[in-house]
Length: 266
Image 1 (cartoon, rainbow, N blue to C red):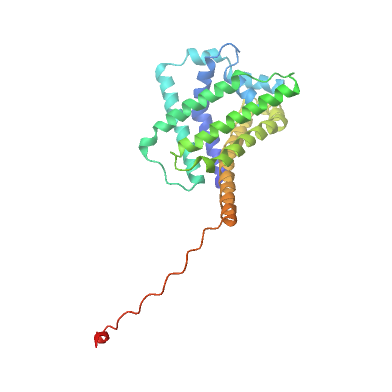
Image 2: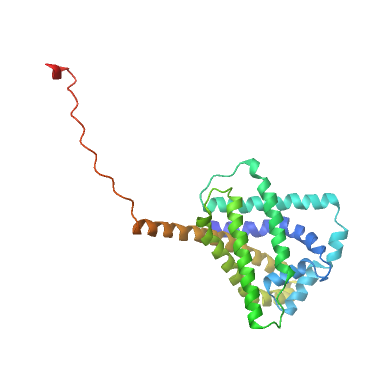
């Protein structure tokens, strides 16, 4: 229940703080003419009909860049930094660590910048719809590898180095595989839901599906980190069973203590 609660909070905060910032950043990429809509389409892996609904929801990307002032961009960046603090709190809860001190807030800024750079790298080379099977497999392998490296580093960085790299490796691997599975799930479930909900509820139906997808992303991020900790603990217990610590020799008996009345000298 707590995992689902945190996943829903992850989705709500992502929609309120991170998505507006990404819309403005994606609007600078006017070569595709789609902006943030292309990012979502590539992440969800939806069909052409659902792609049109997403593009209609976010409108023209150039307007977001033209109508955003310097103060508005600074406010979006400030709200985006709070998203990093929520992810950090979730990781600390997974590993039962105390809350980091206030002077570690600079890590949220660096993490947000690396997240944006990773998203830009992800959408730089999209997979073609009619690409060969081997090219699709290579693209998927590259995406999984990039997600693994990012979340492996993210856990270590947001936890302020309090957990070893080796302990964080299973969680990063499970997160990358889980996001790939969520993308495949989206193609068969969320893609037709976007088309059907757009007819039933209009653009609000598209928002509901996107919010559900963000809940799935949060569930994978936190759930995979928790599963990674369990895998690490099982590995440690097995290592202890195979190589138990050497038993210490018994201590020699202590000499008898003298009686309290001082009669030992008589």
